[in-house]
Image (cartoon, rainbow, N blue to C red; front, side, top):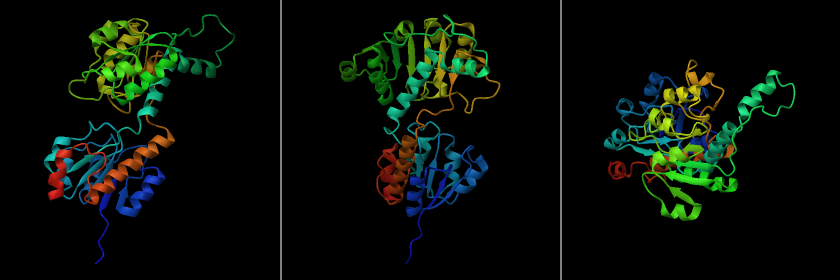
Length: 333
């Protein structure tokens, strides 16, 4: 008797290597439009018969979706973060949730540094100025920025990515402060980072880079009060999750010159609305959530997500299981 391969829905096209692996092990459907996610109604309709879902941060996986998909066994997220997934609701229904940790650490750290340097040296402003035809002569005081070497870098969240950022900072001979709910003596010794509470870090740092997950406790962790503590010459970088920063408060601080600049790869609403005040500010460097967007890393992320999915559909424990408490119930089902 021939056993049909499990049905899977994929919410966005994946790199070829991942799609080929999916094709070998599943009967899958994919939303073909790369630039926009599937409409909610389409997503609910497609998952109704699916045993597996491969999704991005743009898909809301909540009780409604899980109830619409009674055959669903695994949700495989192509990302490290999973704040778009109601993990408790999935666990209650015996649905496994997986993610792709570790693989994007170094690439995202590179992006944080790209934003930091671009904001410090006003690279985006200089690029726009050069292309506009306004550049007439070398000027002594044209686009004066901030020195990075020898400055103080404050790292909010010393996990994998925060530690990778710290390692890069040593090449710039920077003083390193970090704030994290869990103190890391091992990394303090290895990287020469000094623990500080958040208020002290904000007051003393020339550059602040955020690498914390989005939780109820970290939502608007950086708000009006925290921005007011920063130096007027300071630059804020965020490659974690948009809601960690109060975006309206940040735009106001940048507009008033309360801080010197910002480099943002993530936003409270994505894509950023066309009327958002940040778009009018020259001292904000803005990128469209591309922290992990190298060819090699995005391919590894997608391949890892497919490997997680295939393992779960085979009845094996996935390598990167977010909710291990769901494993026995699904296994026993």
